[in-house]
Image 1 (cartoon, helix red, strand yellow):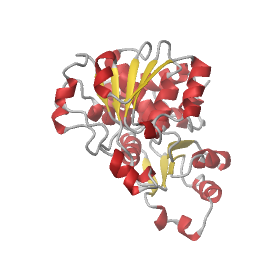
Image 2 (cartoon, one colour; image 1 turned 135 degrees about the vertical axis):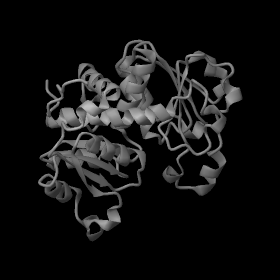
Image 3 (cartoon, helix red, strand yellow; image 1 turned 30 degrees about the vertical axis):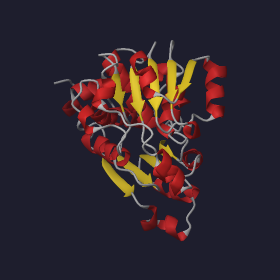
Image 4 (tube, one colour; image 1 turned 120 degrees about the vertical axis):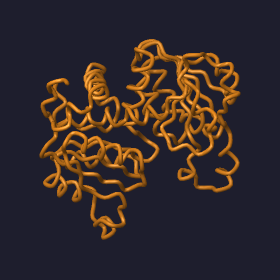
Length: 314
């Protein structure tokens, strides 16, 4: 089935074979970016960011510009008609006549899904509250695949904020579809993975799950260590945030017992949960991970738009 005209709201909206199609194209773009510089001539990306973003917004803009397209939209809802009370439904109806594809980030869970129900163009969820972040998940999957060669039979440790972390929720849900996936969940008791999500993983995919509060206990057992920051913006109580914000700090010394081919990943931005002395360790791939986000978003938009990607390779 073609991806042309489809929406991406949840990572599981696409089959595994459709994800492979995106990753295969992203690999081609990463290896020969210049050959795809004109495939989106005449196409426009609309950006609706109701919540602050740096990497997601700029990587989408970079992706479209690198394919020869253009970008319009807002990065601050207070400067748009939203401040006058315009509904999401009306905003997306109007933008459907201005752009060819749209990415939306919103603090309310389900907002991009609602937009997709009124949109005449493909809608991409750029993150909705603590719910999903599917293009970060595609980025993470591509990163693991490029470094480890396969997405099957991976043991992934998620460390930090597993309660509010939408990147964690998206990736663990997506990885559970691959054969042999096992998950190690490292967090304070207050920030554990939501029970409903854990139950769903066990019921649907019967994946292996181990929970602990001790990073050092399990660091030598995993293929991927996925660090996350404790998200101040998700807390209602400042005192709770201050108490938990330094729960896990990965340093070079803590890597001494990990596998030589383990990957250290992070969706960024980091605060202090990964020390700077980790950056030059060969296991640290989070900056390459951010770079891969450009290629996966290029591939995604090209396929949703149905443009010709059979370019002449240089």
